[in-house]
Image 1 (cartoon, rainbow, N blue to C red):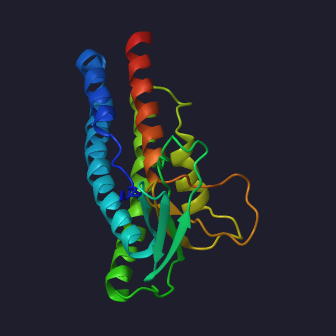
Image 2: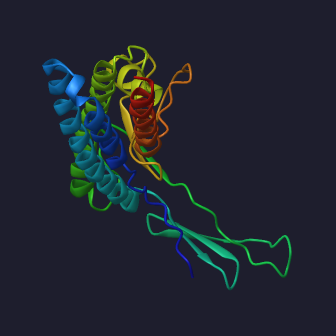
Length: 232
């Protein structure tokens, strides 16, 4: 019987750090003292971001194990088993072609809660500790990531540089939320999520998760510094 892995995977942040280093190797002689200080802070914050990301992914996956359904698939019988809170449900899947076995693709798991509400699990105290750790660290993570985009823009003199995924979470969901926004968090296959619970319509202000948001940040930073090397 196979067990689909619903855990979030650690995104690569080191490539963004290497992009900054590559930029400095070429541009450092022409940079002012202020720009060099900006570069030092940027590199330091990227190292912090990587450490914080590692910690958040671990907490996220621990909460998934405690709260999200456990999924198992028996390839010999084509049976999917979903277990949550000690109760299991079995689903017999039908093959489109009797001669072709069913394969389970990348599963997605999600557990959301309103901050301040007690955890409904057997290990309430442990779960509450993980939740508080994730909440505080997650808000700090996006503050740091947002500051990184500002430093990168200053260092490369690209005033219009932005990472919309980071800005949306930090500015629209954390700092300036809609009136209908519920103070909530989630653990998922795409990493920790900010404000997944809403009681009013929003204008596309949705957090896709820490993993894709971090990937978007790293991709944009790498492209920014690469283009700054070639254009200057």
